Picture 1: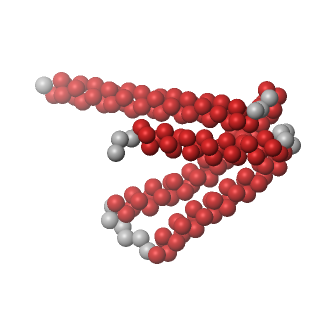
Picture 2 (picture 1 turned 60 degrees about the vertical axis):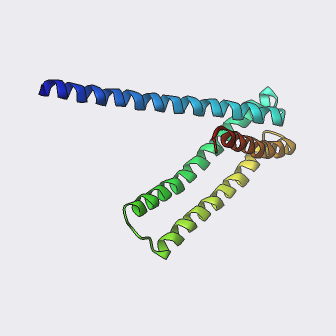
Picture 3 (picture 1 turned 90 degrees about the horizontal axis):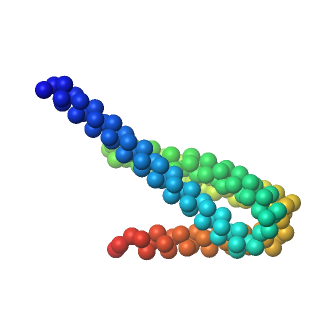
Length: 154
C-alpha cells in the first residue's frame, strides 16, 4: 500500500512539473507572439526599409533589454516588499520612501537610456522615423491595454 501511495505521489509531482513546464512554454510562446506583433506594428508605422530594419531592430532590442533589466529591480523590490507585508511586517515610512525613490531612480535611468538610444537611432535612421517609432510604441501599448481590458470580463 505504501509503495502505491509513494508511486501516486511521485506521478502527481511529475505531472505537476509537466504542467508547469507547459505553462512556461505557453508563456514563452505568448511572449514571442507579442514581440512579433510589436515588431510588425512598429515597422509598418515607421515605414522602415529592409536595410533600416536590419540596423534599427538590434539597437531597439538592446534598449528594451536594458529597460527590462532596470525594471526587474523595481519589480523584485516591490514583490519582496509585498511579501514581507503579507507575512505581517509593518513597513516604516523610510522603507516606503526608499521604494518610491528606487522607482523614481529607475525612471530617470530609463530616460537617460532613451536619450542615449535616440542618438544611436539617429545614426542609422532619419529623425522623422525616430519620432514615428516613439508614436508607434505609445500606440501599440494603448492597443495592448485596450485588448487586455476587453479580454477580461467585468
